[in-house]
Image 1 (tube, one colour):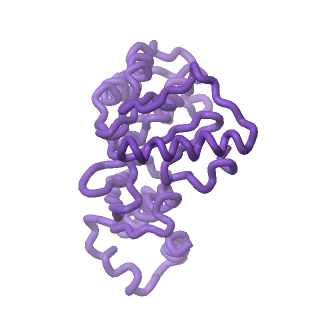
Image 2 (cartoon, rainbow, N blue to C red; image 1 turned 30 degrees about the vertical axis):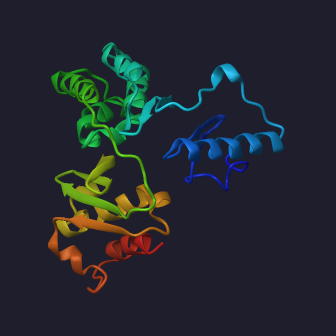
Image 3 (cartoon, rainbow, N blue to C red; image 1 turned 180 degrees about the vertical axis):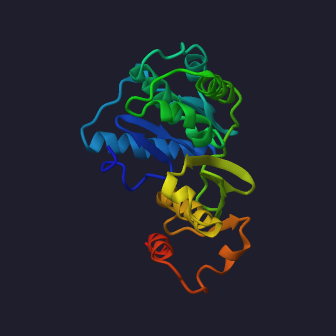
Amino acid sequence: MHKVFRGFLRKFVLVFLDDILVYSRATEEHIKHLLCVLSTLKAHKLHAKRNKCCFGVDKVSYRGHVISFDGVEVSPSKIECMVKWLRPNSPTKLRGFQGLTGYFRKFVQDYGKLARPLTRLLKKGAWGWNPEVEDAFQRLKEVLTSTLVLALLDFSYPFELECDALGAGIGTILSQLGRSIAFFSQALNPANTAKSTYDKELLAVVTAIQRWRQYLLGQQFVVKSDHQSLGYLLKSRITTLYQQRLLSKIMG
């Protein structure tokens, strides 16, 4: 399906498997976009079931999200599912919970830090529910009931990446015009935790660029970091092989 709509993707069409979302700024423009999509389906001898289609709406549920003019948010049905999730009594059930909450991690700042006690529990021979794990389980459910409405991507404006390294984790925010589009965070392994502050802050920047590379390619974007030395990154001398590897990832 991506191949069929390649010329329209990111312009006014989103595709996931056989789900097609057409979006526009105004009604007249939307009609033109719909005609393009329907003509393309016809040209490829593809069909859409009328009872599974909706047209001309200002709010739509799509892949567990509710998308509207205001932005994108977690579907209430998914929130209800997470809130009602019973305490996992096996690694398999915990993976199910983490799979569901992880799907919406872009809505949660510091998701990696919040979920760390649960992630550790999945290591071989580590199973054992305790107060720290219970707190993480309940905290994740609580946070996911009060997520922000994230802004929709608009490729006519530059992106901003806010990057930070805190202790044993890194966190990044993708935004435009002061509105958050997505959050991402992850725990650092022991080797990276032991790195210098400069190296960890650099890793946060590299991780952010790689995470959202598909949006940033060919676009202007600004990287924000509270580590002043990173401002001279491209002008300074690379002193370690680790920094060289990270910089090579940024340069593509």
